[in-house]
Length: 252
Image (cartoon, rainbow, N blue to C red):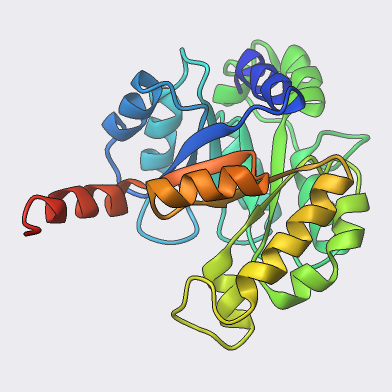
């Protein structure tokens, strides 16, 4: 875990800067090295969808270890073992999908935090410098670890007030496509009325002094989302950006 990078990210958010990042879905750690080289504030390594294994995830974390780019891992579901392992291998934080209540969120937080704040076990892994620095790591982790809930369903949106009010909620990320699917618009990025719904929820979150994140789909969408007040903006996913760039060479 890179304490300095996390502190820098929080400082920028407190100063109302927009932070840009990349969704990482491909195996090569060179992608993360490129993200670092480009000066991106953060990346999210996607361990929910796709085929990344633990070795791949670790290599992405290693690729950013001497940088100020925060490395977050999106897990597949709330699970004590998964959360513990992601943090043990040195991730700066976790993105937790499909949060639908404060109970969901508090359970994820308890797995990520050391006692007495939570129930995370202590292991002699990368995060603790192979056991040689676990006392400092326990302190740093409980003070600086970044946990981000994702709102990806109508139910999650309906319970946003209790999620906002929960301890350690600082950034909330939206998944528009899954939110649309839960509202009956599977296959659409933002089905009928979903853009307005997400924007209204975003306004509640900002009014409570929290920050919001979302993935943008185009350069124009990045500008639009920034104007709306989103402060954690993904410029896209690695595979999608590569695909669009290649296709653009054949457009007439």
